[in-house]
Every structure is written in structure tokens, then in C-alpha cells.
Image (cartoon, rainbow, N blue to C red; front, top):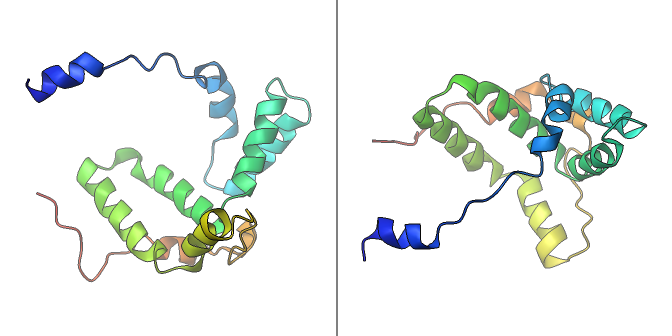
Amino acid sequence: MPVDALLAAFAQSPGESPLIHRSATIDRLFVGDQVEDILGRLEREAEGGADAGWARATAATIRAKSPTSLKIALAQMRRDRTWSFADCMKAEFRIVSRVVYGHDFYEGIRAVIIDKDNAPRWRPATLDAVSEAEVARHFAPLPEELELP
């Protein structure tokens, strides 16, 4: 059986995203280039907005993540808007090539998989302690860049 036919035999529609009903709220809250500002808007929404429960849970989830990773991820999403697929893959390779040598990657593994204490000790521990230079460093060219066809 050809691969396409085999895949088609098992394909299922994923259905409607549960987030589709919150798209206006997401568009309103997740604007800008600062994680701190997004968290602030989520917290204000959690104090009595139409999506208070969702905003509270989302803010808590975000706050549990590595501050450095949060800032890198937001910068990546904001930069990638006009990039080609090859540009995105090169940036991803640059980021990952640096993240694996940092503290937080292994600290997250320790906290969730090894010790299972779910209490990571991020370095730096706060969003305001993550410099723009540290974020930018993850996007800088590597001595050996990813070669794509």
C-alpha cells in the first residue's frame, strides 16, 4: 500500500481547537514584545475579565517556565513573522545549540524527570534578570551554521 493511502486510511480531523473561542482574548492579551507585559494583562484579566479562569491558569503555567526560555520563545515568535522556513530552521538550530549548554534545560529535566520535585531553580530566576543581550545571544550566527538544501 502506498504511504499516502496508508496515511489517508488513518487520518482523522482534529476538530475545532478549544482555543478558537478565546482567539479575541488571546489577540488582546498576547501583544507586544515583553513577557512581563503579557503576564500583566493576563493577571488583570484574571481579576474579573470574561476569561478570568483561563487567564489565571495561563499566567500560572507561564510563570512556572524558565524566564530565559520565555523571553527567547517570545523573541523567536516576534522575529519569525516574515522569515522563510529555512530562516526559521536556522534560528531554531542556533537557539537549541545554545540552550543545551545552559543551566535551565538540565534544571527542567532534573525537576520534572529525575527528582520529580517540580521545583526548578531557574538561573536567572526572574524575568527582569534576563537581559536583552542574553536573549539576542541565542539568535547570533554559529561558527558552523546549519546547512539546508
